[in-house]
Length: 453
Image 1: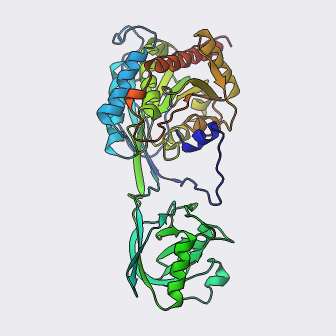
Image 2: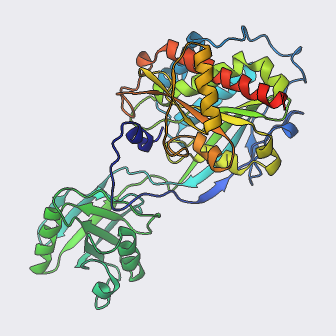
Image 3: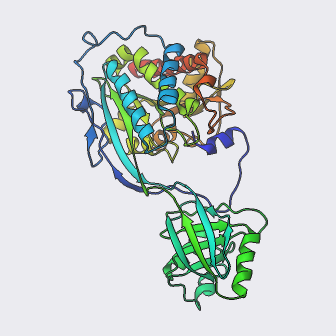
């Protein structure tokens, strides 16, 4: 789940001068099924390849026995352990995420679904460290922060002071092949970097215009390395320039510029009318047991418990990759739906962080939030409608933005959010079962309302 949503739910929203934004797609691949079921599923019309699909015979008589049609928290907890203990951390684009996709795929196949991997890629920024070294006239080290969306590189060069980085500041300067020291203020970080890049600079160092460290963001990936310093550090460098020529080296490591991930899509032999989903990637910091091994585990468990209902009515299941870096998996899935696919979908249920905390929240389209609240009442579970920007925070937002009703089920609050302590031992199987029951109640209500029309 995104850090933005956690901040909103905690009613503590921090405002920053320079905001981070996502980058456009660089590549995507198609989701499809090689079996006879494939033509009936939402088929994202994306260029590329699809891997791994297994079909089943129509109807339920030939499907494998999957046990009782009631969700089990104990069963779901076994999936949490498989994801968070056996596999561990699952950052987008890593081997851990891919192994998780293979595990999820195997579970869906065991229940008789046609399963495929929808592969996609996108440009992304990952801060893996930066440094600023003074080479001459005297050697020294500074402690910069990497500007979000900085380019990567290990760049030595002559340091030049560029003021505020405005065109009028830079006009008399020859910046070709130089590293430019800039002061924060007047124009955005992006404009400063664009201006010095246009004049041939090979790196930029931006220092704060007030006390404290500076952690800035660019709106798009930079062609050159960009780091930031506190005001004291920046003024120190500026003072050195006043004494004569200064040579420095800027190092920024941001990892690979393109990230590859995949969604795991499970469909029955009916056109999809309801989507149940959740993201299975995690942050680097920890094993992601609650965020979002818990939601993924419930998606798998619901696909088992609702299997016969799914094959009768068209309930489909998607485990999304790339959520932590910007809802990429759900965005790619929705982008590939045809107008007929979108019109057919009655709703989407998103499960994210459903196993730690002491209160339930339902967020999203009013119609589905109301269904979730009623489903909770039917199972003696108190679901609290939560009012916020309905597109924020998790994969339901991609569907709402496309005009598809969606609801996000979430349990607050997790003190181990995005930390190394987000472990399976803190996951509550009873909470897993409660979330699954509410989700199944919403599914049944959507199907019933559709049948009555």
